[in-house]
Image (tube, rainbow, N blue to C red; front, side, top):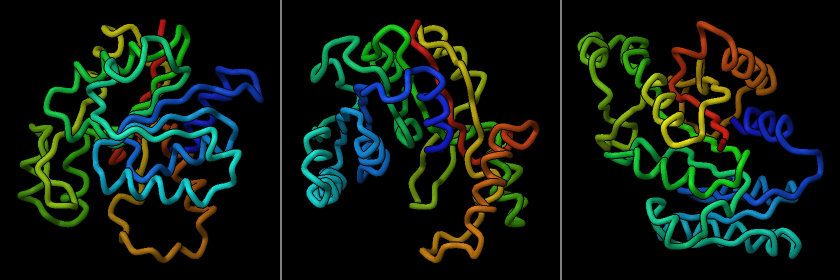
Length: 233
């Protein structure tokens, strides 16, 4: 996903331009820190105090120049209008958040308002058109059958959450003035892999396969996650 995001940024902005980035629901700050290291001015917004503490600890270990380029705010992603003025950012990230939001449209509209004209909105969501893949590949036929006609599922943390369909989000992005420009699949082949910390023997080959599949039909359509990129008109 990081490679996909970089592809969109490079294709939209001059090389070397320092961008204003907002990461909503930044978690422990993995993407936010990566972009700060790349020279961008990054703001991370996260409501989970444990995640905020982890992000601040990670940031404290960075060189001073990177620490100066990143700020962390504890708050709800649905309250961006409380913290920022409209049009304040060139790039807005919202990765792995929508599945926890019962009504995502207001959140998405608020994110779009944060974008300057021509700004990039990057969403990472659970693929509602492929919910039967995980139980099906695991041989859970009852679970697979029950997944075809719903966007509700139970995640690996045991939480009841929701997924998004590509067609629905395409319409939503058009309606909020940030129409879809590109979309990718994420975790096409690796969704059922172990969550262990041991890296595979040939991680570069794995990434090359995932990157190719994530931009190629029909593979991207059955990915566990979708990465959608909209652009503010």
